[in-house]
Length: 127
Image 1 (cartoon, rainbow, N blue to C red):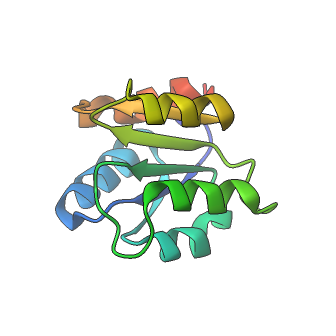
Image 2 (tube, one colour):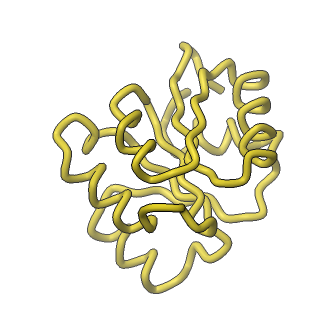
């Protein structure tokens, strides 16, 4: 769980799922969550976050997930912010290659919403 209030940027195009994730993270982990539903919004808001959650399986209206990750990693204001990818295919060759070259973490779907905060804390050593 979050010891201090952590700020998480959630990038997800499904408003209902994003709202459920937001409620769990804010209620269970006492995190402050901002949700956006496009790559451009994510890049604009990323510098305000302590961590970024990006759903890889959702189609963004403007940028693909690779473009979002590359933009975040190339910007000196956001390149050190931990990026956690939510995906149904955590062992895909493309994702594994990306994880090798970038400091990315992944959480496999389908995850337990009530345990999501704990998974994030463990991945980022927020104990």
